[in-house]
Image (cartoon, rainbow, N blue to C red; front, side, top):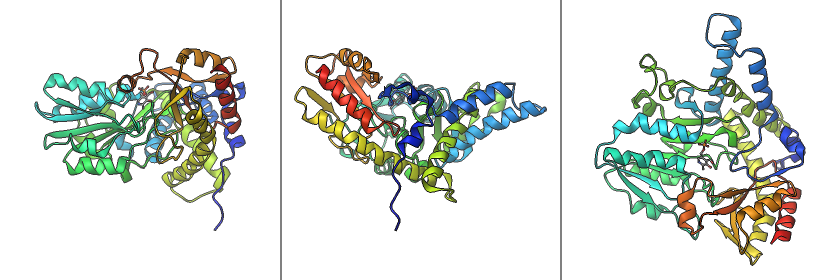
Length: 410
Ligand SMILES: Cc1ncc(COP(=O)(O)O)c(C=O)c1O
């Protein structure tokens, strides 16, 4: 059998104009830089067909087709039907819209489980349903692993549980939760599962049908694309959900969930995200008959194998340096974590560290990253933590620079 190819980082990096600036971008869990294919698609749409779409003249017709195609490709990319994938402005808004659309499914006394590790996007909109009599239960993560545990969920599930909202991967601890196992347990208890895949999706393929999730969320500006997000909902749920849109759009799936519809030029440019992944796939595997999701899985294998290699020295450094406390799993294995490393350093504030790194053109993040409940539970105060988060376009050289610069600051 021929060996699996290794990621050609030179090829990959040539697809990202922002990487030519010399910056080592390590705040990717906050947002990745955009692939050239995405930039080109925005420019093309806005230069040529930026008119009101779906009217009976050629330019308008083409604009409409590009928008529909961008949305369709996102559905195909995650193994869903186009009617099941709503394109919206961001995940926070998408969860808010979802909560509005399914609010009437809950009666007073029904229970809904949220976590204290999630980004507030998959938290606040659900917790607010308390005002309609829904009982909110909090599933606490384990500080030692930085992950959610099935046993702790078991202790919370009752015959009144209707919905469990949790993250696939923590944007703070980097820990990956076992979505298929958790969803099975949630369904056995008669409840639905709403999974935040935002911190997971830059690193792995998304297979919503295999996981059997009811709702899944992903922000495309963290997947090399424009500032848009997708909400997947099983078709039966989209059909049953209340219409958030104009009354005459009641039957338009999934548009009924999104009042006003999606941003046109950016939705059209979503085809640039799949163009990018197609380019990576063809470069490494040649022309292929595999369906898109199969190709995405191969690309994800290339990406995560590379991410493990570049993350290992950084993990070793964080674990062995006396002044540093690592948050989350002490492993780079992609089953356990994404290469999103939050940490604290004795006698140094996160801001001091970030400013010191920026002097060497290394961009990292600081604060609570809107996972404020998680940072509070871990006992980090106002300053929060420092986060260096990598994706497949980062290199061993960049990580070596990060370690050397950090070490000089400490
Ligand atoms: C895990 C996670 N979920 C949700 C969000 C919110 O995404 P958006 O900015 O699209 O609302 C973020 C953003 O950082 C995130 O990291």
